[in-house]
Image 1: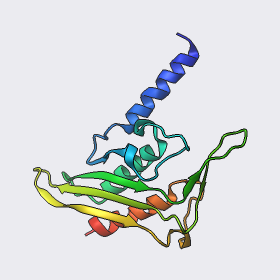
Image 2: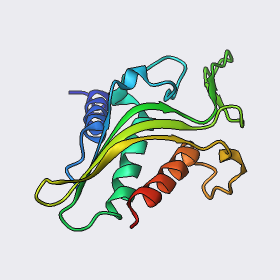
Image 3: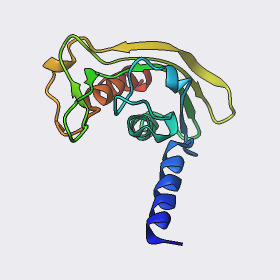
Length: 165
């Protein structure tokens, strides 16, 4: 087996594992992700399993939400739509690099369902949420290099408001 083939297999296995459900107290699912308003990394659509934005959002929510849970509690979050801040514009230059243009006209938006359970499986809280941050571009954001900084900030605020009791 060639080195190139081994590398491809390892990368593929890592991407699949990153998209698979996390065995921790927080479970994140993307329901019909191929129908989301805008979660693309490139102008050409890729399968949800290969979408780095979804994998990054999953890791972020799993880590941040776990902080708000008491021992034994579990939280399931199902994203039903995501519209990233900005708008993806295809580039016709030789590098074929697409550009996400971020302006106040395109705020981040998300729709989700959540269920919080105790250690015995009893539902403590559940519901739906529509998140939007109209003034996203006026906030001071620490890591300007993170392409999902606006979405993560919006999710952090929702988690804090919903579960920090």
